[in-house]
Length: 296
Image 1 (cartoon, helix red, strand yellow):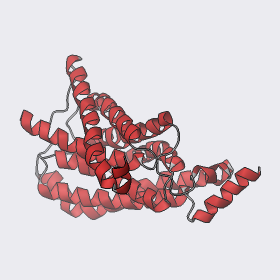
Image 2 (tube, one colour):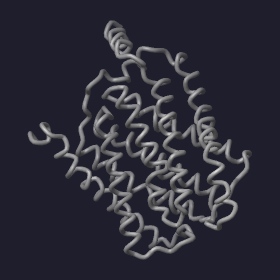
Image 3 (tube, helix red, strand yellow):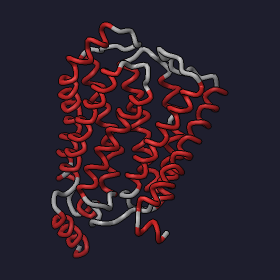
Image 4 (cartoon, one colour):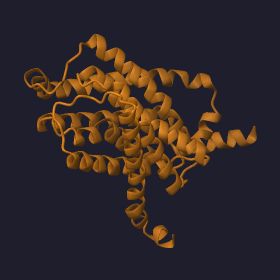
């Protein structure tokens, strides 16, 4: 433990693999349950060998483990609450979100199966991350600022955040469109292009569920505001795009690269906006809020 405190890299070298093992164990158990239940798996345009599936599964497990560890270091509260916040965030952002995307942009099917599939990996991975990483309080808890302000001062922020995600999503989507739309139209990878009448309502729905799981994470954050921005940016980018695109080997390189850059832009701007709206901009605001709570 002393070695880890002096050099945090030592801890990361064994903790990330441990979290990856827990996550991958959840993958294996979930896969066995779904197979036994004879639920329908998605029909992908390219079949992978067992070795390829295993390799991609391990890669995605390590990437998920790194993101879970990054978030676990900042989420404060009791162990049970920390686990619930992290597991819910991982499941919604990685599992539910990607299946919503797949349901409207692909013809692969198996949506219900995958919604069930990701429950155990996210739960097991989050449990390992919370157990191995304790929060590192380097700044006063943002929750104090929430407690010191009335609900009426927050509702408009929720509305702006809810409407902002579709706007950010469409902006970066339009930038990527000249490169990706021709691929969707000319190559058969089971991809579809729904109209705005579908895309916008779905984006609003996704925005709402993001807020449900992200606001508790922001409120419980125990580290600095800057670390929150970067941690959320990395988590959104990895869970919304990077992990899925790394494993989608049947997509052409131009599609994987363009969508990766697009989602990176989405993630950084969205994370910054959420922190700007729901986390105080400067530390003295938190200290003043804490003082107000103590005086009351």
